Image (cartoon, rainbow, N blue to C red):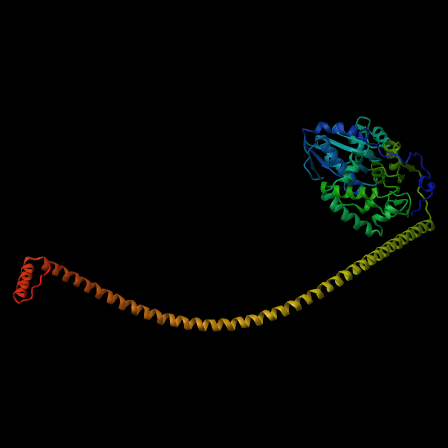
Length: 477
């Protein structure tokens, strides 16, 4: 749920309007061509660049200038008022510094005039400073970012090289710049949140509000106490050197990109909105800078409106808007709380279902454990029986071991007796062998004797003797 300011509050006093549903131009070539073409002549010559010290708008200009140098192939070194510029090309940053309120660009021109080989002032708002303009010579090239500035320089010094161009911030590809994922984005995100928080607002507030007031609070404001949610040009005054400028420009553009509509009297907030296609009501400053640049560079851009006077939003109306914003915040908080409660309820239901599932699982586990216990009891009884049987077997084994030991003893004794018998048998065998050998020897001797003639003669003698004795017997052989 959101509320929007009345359409009259957004466009009151606007001198030019365009449809807000159209996006910014896809190609900013027409806003860049004059300066881009001019810079190409310095591709072979390193230049000295002096950025303007200043606010977030100056950081945006610096970041865009570095992009323009890169596209043109220009190498540069950062300079200061003390830099030796003899024989060098010096490029001074664009912006709104060459006006009576400020002196930085005037002092730079005074310091470098007559010493540098070439001095280039990038697109600037130029008011006053007539004595300085009169002294500029053929070594100087000035770019004016609006028709009034161009006419002023021509009127004061008709011979000086002055050219009409557009603000340097148009050289930045804002959407691509915000899409980059780098250290710039990481640092910028932290700084953006911190700086907005210091103002009492947040990125979510800017996204939710129908319009955000990004008004200046300095000497250029046409209103003493202009209502403002934040002055991001002052908020993101982080520096203009390359590293600082890129982070500051990222924060600056990111804050603008969050808005549905921007109400501002900061020129570069308006240019940032134009680059991003964010609807914007731009109001003038005290010396007409904003209206002059708007008419030259933004009058035909979608969603851009120029208001000739400040929106005189009353304190009561602003309080009402803040109250409505607070109510919206409260509603958002309540919706968030309801969403959290709903989430908690859903989580409780899920936890209950989970608990029921757990209970069922625990019951099933208990039943399984009970069954297992029964099986373990039965197994225990079986094991007890087996242990008793094991004890009986152990007893039998002990008896068998005793018998086995007795048998082993008997076997040893039997083995000894057998061994003794074997020894006796061997001795008897040896004796028998000796006796057999002796018998064989005796038989051989007898056979020899019987076969001898002597035996035969003796046998005949014996037979003769027996015969003579009256016992006739024939002896064999």
